[in-house]
Length: 348
Ligand code: NAP
Ligand code: G4F
Image (tube, rainbow, N blue to C red):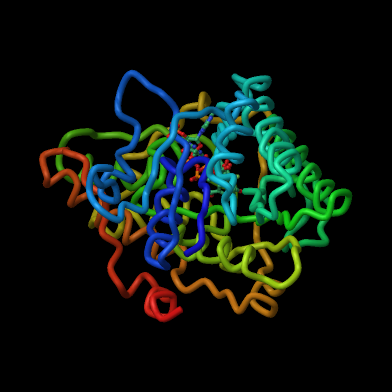
């Protein structure tokens, strides 16, 4: 049985990755932040009382700003694999909190890499790098495209990208960067644009709200489905040699395209309900991200299945059902059809 440590297990990707690894028989350790309210809603369905037998999900308090705690965790858990998904991950917020973002999203990765290096373990390390690194570089972007970051978030991720390469090339660590284009799901944070739209559609349809206020509708993104992308992360750490890979659908749409699809799926006229608010504009925008996943397809046999337009429909369906449950949160149980790799994974 392998042991994995997930930093950022309470996030969108962390929760799907925990499901995937538990399904593959891993012992999974996750780091959560101490908060005055519960912040484990995305993984509560995986949690079992530690007094039960054969519990394979273990949660530990920790923070990416606390290097000594990270070293203690690495040395005591001795993981075969570490997935560093922890970050202040919101681009707009990074303009308000640039140094905090640099600390958590940039230096945080260096703290984990140094902990692995100091421990002397043969732990494999996955760094959640991002298509935001490409910034204003012309599409389509792939592993060879030069980075032109356009936000404090992207600058922090640029640092963690290079630290990952440095520990690979300098110290021989099995450390990889997954350069992932936007990926979404019913578990996406509520202030990212796709989820903001699909929640608004559900609430407008239910008569709870009349309008949603949006920023730049002309930005283009390559939106994929998060469960498929966590499978790609795992594949990167199973490869014979460490290398960096882009994961993307290869299809790009404007924010407006996604918005129209979501409203139409609910039978609503978007023009009656969408208003502009400049507060959602960014000091610098990333206009066009459109990924080329050829390397991951060829070397990892990874392929995306769910298209951006299918995602819009799926997320509207979920948010509509969530409201029907009187607004109470419930975690989506991913339909098997959306888990193209699951059967194969259980056969491993
Ligand atoms: P997310 O939902 O925002 O989750 C971020 C995770 O990091 C949460 O578990 C959060 O904990 C944790 N975290 C934040 N600050 C922390 C700190 N100081 N110490 C410890 N943990 C901390 O992000 P996601 O969408 O799952 O993305 C996962 C990773 O991939 C992130 O690094 C993101 O930047 C990167 N990425 C995402 C995308 C995408 O489209 N989703 C694309 C490319 C790269 P709380 O729950 O307590 O806040
Ligand atoms: O959904 P977004 O906030 O995601 P963004 O900025 O692309 O970043 C996400 O993807 C990155 C990968 O490329 C990740 F690294 C990062 O952690 C995060 O997950 O915004 C998408 C686009 C932007 O161009 C934004 O200006 O939507 C535009 N937008 C228009 N109106 C809006 C809004 N974005 C948000 N969040 N809210 C709006 O009202």
